[in-house]
Amino acid sequence: MPRHPGACRGMPWQSAGMPRHAVACRGKMLALLWQFKIYKTDVQVSHEATTLAEQLKDFSFIVSLVVWYDILFQINVVSKSLQSPDIDLSKCTEMLKKCCTFLKEYRNTGFKSAISTAKELAEELEVEPVFKATKRIRFVKRQADETARDEPIVSPEKKFEVEFFNSLLDATLISVNERFEQFNEYSDCWSFLYNIKQIPEKPDLVKLCSDLQLKLTVNSKSDIDGCMLCDELISLKSFLPDQNVATPAYVLNFIKDRNLQELYPNVWIAFRILLTIPVTVASGERSFSKLKLIKTYLRSTISQSRLTNLATLSIENEIAENMDFERLIRSSPM
Image 1 (cartoon, rainbow, N blue to C red):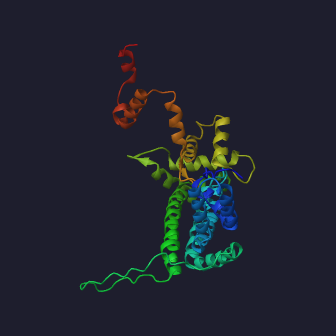
Image 2: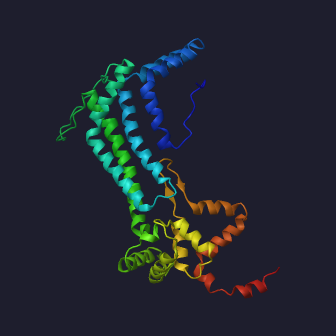
Image 3: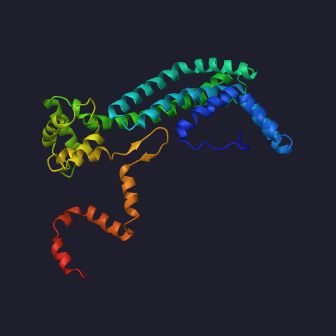
């Protein structure tokens, strides 16, 4: 066992789940070990260890560990799946939807089950399964113009449910729902490209390609042609090897290895955009963007002034399109 407790260096969402479960199962042993290791070193440290041991044996703390574990275990399953290189957007959306459903059901019925599990752990730790009142209930005098008032929560168990359990589940649901809406929006536009071997019939495919064209249109200019993309997908499907799944990365490498970029320009552009969409994973709260990685790589080889000039050209693209670059190159000093 290490001499000092170390910080969790993994992803914030997933790294918090298993340590809490381990402490919940072995809380008493952990507290006693801390006291035993530092008891004779310093009186103040020994007192802090004793206080920590008492807090670890508090029943409300055990219930909070059970609740955290139930939530984080479910989210960790989704998080691990989202980090798989073979998963597609439709599967991501479906898993997040099921995770939201679980959290909604857990908010309604999970508190009682968490208390039941916590009581079993409390028996193992020899802890009294009772919520302790933390402070005296304060009653606020009602003013004359007030029609009603919120009665203070007298029961410590009900207070714990309202202030900890409900607020925690509400915050978690908001966070997961936000990701579900983002993935659902991406799925509506891009999901049909995740397996060309199973693209829909042509009428439906034309509509999907047209919707994608509109999504990629800025100032009446689009990166792709929806009708041409539909024809290219149907043509490319017949040339792909006989296999059940043709992932975007596989299709892109297939086109690149055979130098088919000029024959399938819209597919080439669409799949490159698809594979550079930033993806936020629930386990880390970080944005892993391929575009950011490319930008970081370019910054190491391009000076800041050149990056500024390139940004100016990109912003003033309408003016740049009308400029005669050959004349400017000839007139510029070498």
